[in-house]
Each structure stands twice: as structure tokens, then as C-alpha cells.
Picture 1: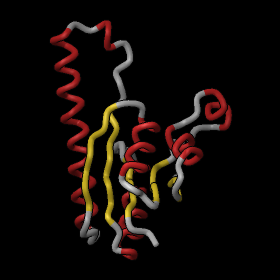
Picture 2: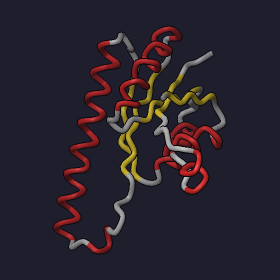
Picture 3: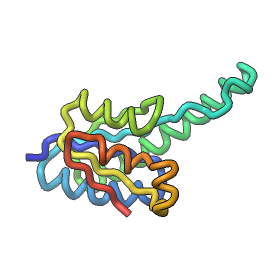
Picture 4: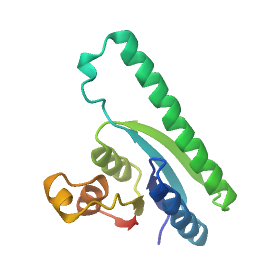
Length: 142
């Protein structure tokens, strides 16, 4: 039975499709949805002065919160009764996997970036890593 679903979002078109599917599943099973957005560490952050770094972090936090707020509105509009949101910091795949494990998640529903096979072999993607390393059911949405 599906009781807890994690829905990692990034504000992309894939995220909107993910919300559609996840809300359908959550409504059908009366599952709790965990809406998460992961703030990745800034590349070259060590090169920024402290004031600029604080400003960038503040703006990115606002951006992350807007993504979460929009997702919450969509889940609520689609009749999902139980949801919780979190903004995580770190490597996206690792943070999603850790959150899923800590919260006893039964399913992960996330977007695929649609990378080509060559890119996947060289770099991988968050969805690829999560699907291969998670202990629960994982659905990727194109």
C-alpha cells in the first residue's frame, strides 16, 4: 500500500507533470505527499565575497520557496489532503534518498531531465541516481 510519496520538484515543466501524477496517486491511496526542493551548493561560492554570497543565498531561498508554494497550491487544488514541504540543501540525489529513507517513503515520483544516453553515461542525472539507489518504488515522468 502507498502511504507516503516524496515529490522532488524544481519548477520545471517536468515538475508540473509530476504534480499531476503524484496528486492522482496520492488522492487514490489517501497518501501523504512530501514536496521537496533541493538547493544545490553554489559552484565557485568560495570566489564570492560574503555580502554577495548572502544576497545570492537569500534570492535562491526565495526562489525555492516560490516553487514550494506553487506546488502546495496545485496539490491542494487537486484534492490532496495531506502534504508537507521541505527545502533541503546539498547534493540533490543524496538529499532526496536520505529524506525518503528518514521518512519511510513508499514511492518517489520525480521528473526526468530527458538527457541523452551519452550525457547519462558521462554525468548521470538526479532522477537516474535516485531510481537506481532508492529502496522504494520510483517513477520518473517525462
